[in-house]
Length: 274
Image 1 (cartoon, rainbow, N blue to C red):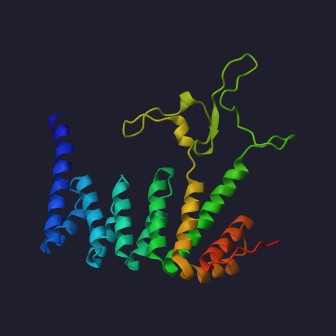
Image 2 (cartoon, rainbow, N blue to C red):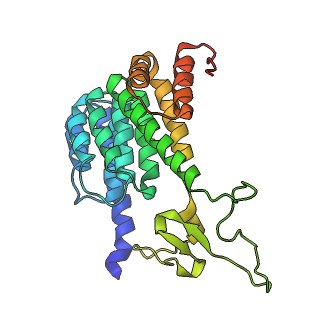
Image 3 (cartoon, rainbow, N blue to C red):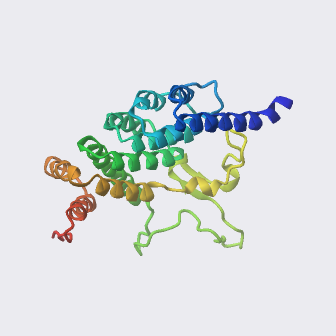
């Protein structure tokens, strides 16, 4: 057990060394740049140290770090915070060669647990800009629109009232005998589960709150993607126009949102379509 107590101390020492390297670099020691860059790609270094190295490379802003940072996006790593730091660093450096790598990262990050890395990635694409970023963001917006449409279709509505129902029991509801009913449907779990039927401990040994598993990040992600497309600016306009003209099937909601983005970019009021 003693070695477990040493891990936080080692991570702290590693971050301290990184800070010292950065200080020396700022004083003119160029050799420290290569050392900091190497640390990002070394899985044998403490995780916190690698994160700090990625953050520093973003602050330095030297394009020589881009190849290492791009490769780091494709390394297998269960935790996502390092990749978020790498994505932010690439956005700070501003090299658009990383856009495709960030797009591939989005392709591989479709789990609910990856919401933070997706939102970091779309924000970075908005900062990097260009046609390719706009294309990926338009595809992301279409994806989120599809998810939200499916979620709406999945909602259970009363046959006679047409009202949306909390299926099968809303919080606080009781049956005819006054017994509390706590079951709820979770489509991602494949059906009806009560609180007691959910796993209580995660694979990492942490406690799970079943109701936290109901969190749906899609609306927030859609909003972040909208903001990122506006941030791309005029380069996004022809991409959006091509998408609207070439895509035969899209929801009216998505069409109106894309037109609103074009209006925001051009600085004119949106036009309501019939």
